[in-house]
Structure formats: structure tokens, C-alpha cells
Image (cartoon, rainbow, N blue to C red; front, side):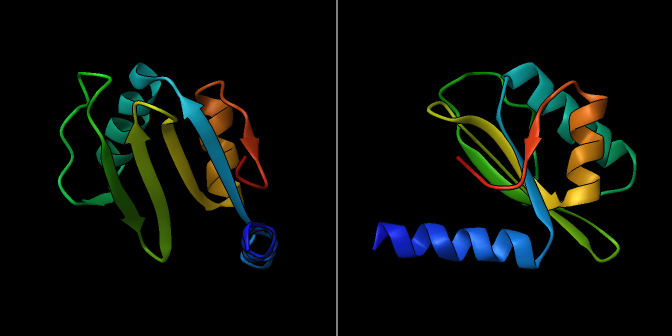
Length: 103
């Protein structure tokens, strides 16, 4: 079943032209979320800056027709996925590597 799931995720990322940034350190993750909010992105659920590594959070940033899926956990750190051009721009701006598939 795991192989089918990986194939489906790869298909979905290619079909929807998605990218992902993974393993984002806590300080950069907070900075990215705050910057997006200051640029007019709407966030759900409400976001409070992550201060401790033990905290977990998942939410969506929306602006126009674009949606970024964001999550934080102590095991995987931060992850943000969404449309390739936006994710690549965020990666370049914050010196983080984006990829076309999650690890």
C-alpha cells in the first residue's frame, strides 16, 4: 500500500505543479509565516508564533486562488507545500531548498 500512496502523491504533485519545503528550522518557519501574513495571506486556524520545539501546528495560508499547506512538528520541523512558483520563491527568499516531491 505504501508504494501506491507514494505513486499517488508523486502524480498529484506533478499534476497540480506543487513543490514543498521541508525541515524548516523553527526561526525560519516563524519568519515565513509572519511575512506571509504581513503580505496579506489569510491563515486558518489562527497562528501563534511557535516558541517551543514540542509544539505542533498545521494550517493553511490563502491568498486569492493560492493555498499553502503549512505544518510544524518536533519530529519533522516545518513544512510548507503549494504551487511551485510560490514555494520556489519562498525557498529562494529564505535560503531553503524546495523540491518537487515530499521525502
